[in-house]
Every structure is written in C-alpha cells, then in structure tokens.
Image 1 (cartoon, rainbow, N blue to C red):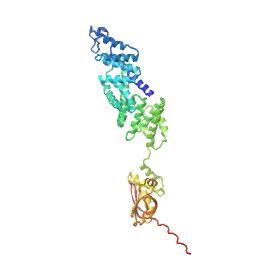
Image 2 (cartoon, one colour):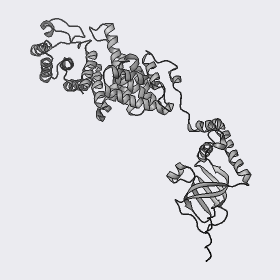
Image 3 (cartoon, rainbow, N blue to C red):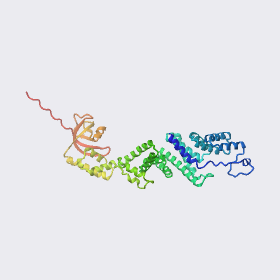
Image 4 (cartoon, rainbow, N blue to C red):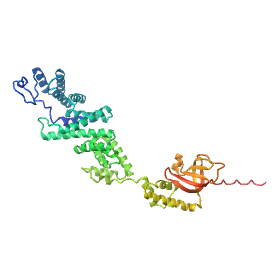
Length: 437
C-alpha cells in the first residue's frame, strides 16, 4: 500500500511541478483601480481580501498554506481568485502528501470548472488506484474523467509562464495518464481491442509504467483470436516487476502469461528463450508472433496419428478419436476413411465378426448401449449401439462388463457411436456332467 501511495504522489508531482496556477501578483494600485489592468488580469478590489490571499500565497509550509487557502475560500466564496485559491490548496496538499485532501479539493475544482485539466488528471490517477482494488464507483468516475481529459487536451492552451518544452512534456504525461485509464476501463468492460488501442498509446509515451504494460499484455492475449504480441508485453511487464523488486506482481503476471503460452503452444518448452529474447528488445518486432509455434488441434492430431502409425495397429480408442473428426477437413476425411477400411478388413466385409469387451450402459431385449473406451466407461457414455441377432432371454445388467460379438456396420462422428448388428453374447461354458457312481 505504501508503494502505491508513493507512486501516486510521484505521478502527481510530474503533473503539477511544471507550472503553478496563473494567478498574477496584484499590487494595491491595481486593486483600487488607479490604473487600468490588462483584460486577462484578475483584480481583487477588497484590500482585506487581497491581503488574506497574498498572505496565504506566501506561506511556505505546505500544510499551513493549504489550510490558509481553504480558509480564504471559506471566507470569500465569491472571490475572483476562488479557483486559483483552490488550485493553490490542491498543489499544497500534493506537496504535503495528503492524498485524501488532494482528491477532495480536485473534485471541488471540477464542480466549479468541469474542464479543469489539472484536476481531471489528479482524480483520474487517484480513482484508478482505487478502481484497481475493486472500487466500482471510483472506476465509473475514472472512466468519465479520463474521457473528459482526452477531449480537453487537444484544445488546452499553454498556461502563462510555462515554456513550450515543458508544456509539450506535461501534455504528453497527461495523455499517457488519460489513455492508460481509458484502457483500464475498456479492459474492465471486456472491450479488449479498444483497451489495446488506448494502452498501446500509453506504452508509446511511457514504456516503464508497469500497470499499463501488463494490462496491454492482457488486452492482447484476451482478444479473440489471441494477439500473440501480448507475450512480448508480458516479458516487459515481468522485467519491470523484477527491477522494482515487486515479487507479488511478478508471480501473478508470470502465472497468467505462462498459462496463456502453454495453452497456445501446448507446453512450456521455449518459454524461457522467448522471454529472454523479448527482454533484450526495445521495440516490438513485426515478426514476434511467428516465434511461437501453435500446438496442433485435436483434428490435426487425428491426421498425424494415421500418418505416423499403422492404422491396423491402433486401438479402438484411437480409431474412435480419428473417426470422430471425419468432417473437420479433407485430411481428416482421408484419415477416417483409412481407419474405416481397416475395420472393414478385420471383418472381411462382414464375414468375420469382432469380439469386443464393453461396459453395459443400458439394455433392452433387442439392443445394448455400451461403452468401449476407458474414457467412455468412466463417464458412463455409450459409444457402441448393438442390435442383437435375436431377443435376449436374460439381458445383462447395466454396469456389467461383458464381451459382445457382432459386425460393425457404420458409425456416427458426433456424438460418436459405432453401429453393430448381428450382436450376440458369448455362450457360457457348459458345466461338466456329474461323475457316475
């Protein structure tokens, strides 16, 4: 928690340090109107109000200055420098590391001026920290404020007294903050391509922001289909966590990213090499995704099984697996045809019958629904439908392990089912005749 607070204050320092509010220091001559001030100059006409403001402005201690500005606002709620006093109080609370009061004053400024870019930046940063911890009202406010900030930035005028270089730098930092927050909002709403767009812009400005870099990785890897560039951002985020000794963040990111890699690739092999290679790169290579080999799909595995093995030597479970993907592709159709031909060859075109050990799932006098493979037997799912040659006088009980004899004549790929006809149960061996006396 302390680490988060320090990081927040550091971010806010960067936002506020480049300029103070454009206030103008008014002398008593201008205050009493003896000269005509510039049109842009604010004039305090009441000497007591003027002195109270100048006294607060010149207070050096941040806590005392913030208190003095708050007292001024309370005493002179209609003052021409009301917003300026609030901004001075906001900056003093930032220097005093008083996050609660900083947020409170920033929101008061937004009530007076909803387009105040500095206040929008502050509440966006603070609400994002709370939203990260599950605060839903803060998330909602942050999303609205971040979008308002992005809308205001293009027309924001350079504050008086700020150099062009500092203004450009400040504007970039605010753009980073608003894009990062907007990306987080889109991520929470599961709008992954939108989140990726916002977070990519944030990364281009500040590639050292751990939160933005990791959330960009997530946005890529949750997009459908997965954008494998997310693995590159995983490497960057994990490295940032290591550099800041944030073991908790590192472990969480490593678990998520590695699971995504394993799901796509089919194993952990190559992971370390992929991460170390990405860590050494300063920019995302255009061919990065090609470094990760996709794991074969079940349908592809079915084709490989036929290409790499003698079909006649495969088990019933293998046959079933290959036949179940018959309609997946032309290659699967060819593989299934070879398996079916092998089965027909064993049966010699129906002249020979197969004897298969099965588990009875359900039974009538004329049919048996049975499970052949271990998987189907464990889940009590039938993958063999037997039509008996004649009605059974004593049908086997459901759950019984038996041998069935018959001819497989057809199959259904999904849900998979072999069709057997001319089914018979093996005859029980006859008991030996009793010995004669």
